Each structure stands twice: as structure tokens, then as C-alpha cells.
Image 1 (cartoon, rainbow, N blue to C red):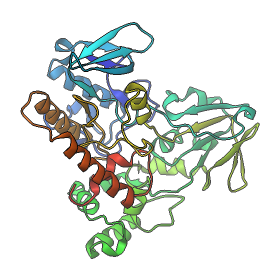
Image 2 (cartoon, helix red, strand yellow; image 1 turned 60 degrees about the vertical axis):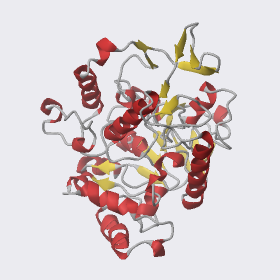
Image 3 (tube, rainbow, N blue to C red; image 1 turned 45 degrees about the horizontal axis):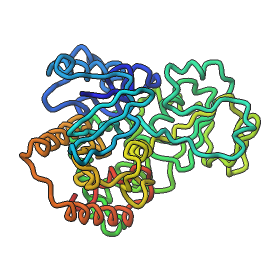
Length: 402
């Protein structure tokens, strides 16, 4: 049984996702290993939009008869999951319903970008006469068409994409500027291998990196990267570890639109009647304030597994054994929480395969104490090596030996 909170399959690629959402790189770097992109979906296109990606996922499901073999329950948001130790199962309660589902194996596949939208708590919100929305609520952008002035808070992919809708009306407020990568860079031969070598050579201290990595990182990559408000750092790797880098891949048209923005290198201090007062003293007038500030799915984990102390703090993500399993949640597997990846579908497929091997008893999990020790070691190393991020627990496979 699949419990789907939405009315359709596709996750972040569903039809109500904001207009302009697309793959960040070429389609051949985002596909299942056993299902190439159909030609009619990518003809003349390098980075398909949300409708094409959703259709690709639908056809993949059809290939394996998922719709006929699996019971998919739409509009079923999980409220809580409670362990029944006597029956060795999970009792799953559906929100806004009396329905209960019992499962021996529970797979959490809610993703990093679909639950727990982050809207910072900014003083004097009650004074503001405009509208406040998260990027996940933008949809077709109708709310932005009637606005005279738009303020977008954040420097991530969603902030960049939404800024494309009404660029001449937009002020982009980002605390930390980031490099933007031209899309043609991803088309270079062996780019995926170059990127892997670059990430694998990351060390916290620049002096510990090899000379080849430093040349690629501090000379070549910043030379080809674009940005009308570049970061202070000359290291693309350091920028990535602070939330920037390769996640915004721009076309020439998008870059021209971005030049129409008013850019503010600051962060909101408080709301005013007509907009936002920034830490740098500037006031930004806006009818609509959009927060492109990401998601924190661990909030959903806290609600679903109520009463289970998962770890000391969930602020930087949930640390898992192999990025999949938590020792305190028997027979619960988390898929899609290893991020970023150059090929997310293939990565998720490998995680799914390992999960099925464990569920079938083909692969054996280590003792609980061993898993806890491995998780604790990785958590400690990660927090010492990387700057804070609410998804730090998921991307730290760049660490040596991971």
C-alpha cells in the first residue's frame, strides 16, 4: 500500500508545483538505470520541466504495472505511526480520517523537498498588510501577476526560479550570495566524473586539498560560474558546503532576467506595513513576500514518530545508518535522504534495492549498538567538518571514506 498525501504521483514534480520548476541538469543525469527517457519527452530539451518529469515517472510506474499491482491511496497524509511490539508491526493513522493502516515494513519516502516548509519567524508579521507565502504555494504564479512589488527571501533554486516569473517587479534578498552555474557546463564530456573527483577531494582546510582539486575548485569553476552578486569565497566547494554552488544552473535567458532584479545582500530584520526592513537598514516594499527558504522534513518525523527520541537535535537533519535506517525505529526505512546526488533516481533505486534485501532477510543489519556507534561517529565528524545546514545529515557522503 502506498499512502500519497497529494492527488497524483510525482512528488515535487506534481502539477501544482510552481511554474518554471525543471531539472537542474541534463535529463540523462536524472533517470532510472533501467528506464531511459522516452524521446518524445526530451526532443530538443536538455532540462525537462515538471510536466515532462512527472510523465517520465508515470511511464516508469506503468512499465512495471505499479498502478495495477499496488494499492495507492491518494490524499492520505500520515498523522502518526505507532509501534505495536506485540504484533511486530506499525499502526499508521491517517490525518483527518479514522482510517488506520497496519504494516510490517514502513518506508518513509516523503523526500527532502515536500514537507516541513521553512518560513523564518520574523518580528512584527502582524503589521504587514501584504501576503506571505512559501515557494511551495506559488503554483502557476497567479498571485504574483497582480503584485506591484515582490520580495523573495532566499538564494536557493526555488528562489531563483520564482524570480523568473516577474523579474522586473522582484527584489531578491539573500544573506549569502552563491555562484550560479551556466547550464552548458553540465554538458561537458565526463562532467559527472569531474564533479565526483572534485567533491571527493574536498577537505575542510584548503591547504589539505590536492593542487589539482584547488585548481579546479578555485580557478576553473569560479571562472566559468556566473552571478550578478558573487560570493566572497573563491572556492566553489566552500560555496556548495554553505548552501550554494551547482544547484542553480542558468540559461542565458534566465541570466538576463536575473539582471532585472534588485539584489539585497542582507536578511530580513522585521516586517513593516508595506514590506520588510533589512539588517542593512534598507526597506523593501512588497505586496507579496515569498520565502524560498527550503524544507525541513525532520519536522514531519517528529510528528509521525511522536514520543520517540530520534537524536539530540533534528535541526541539521536525521542521521541514519547508510542514510536509510534508524536503530530506534524497527523495520522503518527512509528513502531519498542522501543528498545531493548527480543522479537522484538511480540513487533512490539502489536504496530501495537494499531495503528490499533487508526486508526479505537477504541482507542482515548490524547489531543495534554497532549501528548507533557508526551513526554517532558520522554525526560527530559531519558537525565538526561542515557548516550548519538543516540538511547537513544528508549530504555529508562527501566525507572521505563515505
